[in-house]
Length: 428
Image (cartoon, rainbow, N blue to C red):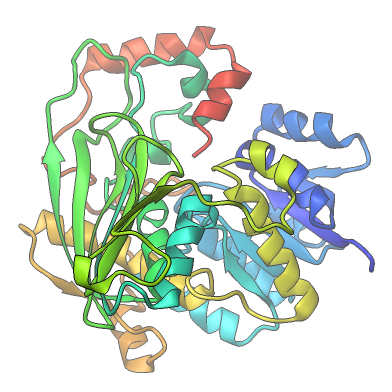
């Protein structure tokens, strides 16, 4: 079977995925980025045969089967649409659309195309999350009623390597990222485990005045968005976006009528599975604490070093299988789930700005819902075309960094050197 030809847009994230693409039968034939330093990082891995572009419209005409979209967080949809128009398959990072209108446009373009689209959400592929899904589907927890997800990623202020690699100009998206927007690492795993889809959302943010002596360009003083959804199966989720409180952790819990399962706080992939005393399944204990195994057919050695707890390798593998088998990916990695998650992120932020009032998540399989949002372009981000935000990014709507903080950050960038270990640590 011949290898699949892959193009990469956005080489900063992609450099960590190169081994996973190669192991899953992709030949990386072209890369596109405006940042020459980042292009060099990938070409150093792959050699001089890879064609390099700085213009996407030229890049998209290269002969390739699929494109990985690792460009700016909120700007995937327009590039995915261009791929659809050429019948090119798409693996897209983070949220699928930065505005509600883009969600409508993305789905309309997809439904006219022959492309396979997959959200590159990797946390559901972690060992603990796969085990939660297995147990939930096994039925021993009873009817699933409630789930929690936390993606907590605090960062040390003044990290020069992070500044250089991830946040290197004042209008960068990270400086305007509402706490509810980076939601797929917390929401994706509990959607995958339960099979549920959010239909209504509410949100409250936690604000604390940042240290005025820390260099920053950020206009977001919130530490976390606490989001709750009602779901199409009657269950309720509580989860965060990318939070910044306490210690670093990724935690998930699912509760049913008979028991519950969670990964133990601060212990990575170790699982605690508990049942009511009168509903213990045969062969189990009331409390079961264990570390799940990878599937015996998985590439055990590569999983140990692949990013996001092995999730990167398995996410790329699903994408490759979908292309070869000519099928769309399963829930929650398909395009409709992706737009659903993006709608949660966007409307949770609006809920927060309006005091936590609930928003219905539109069902974009229906044209009447698409009509309602087809011109909704509210965004907290600067656009690559220089367009300005038209909605606040923080719960304290007039919050902004001080001149001292901005000057310190500018000085930090001047002398910053990229440290490989810091890159791996912040590979989000």
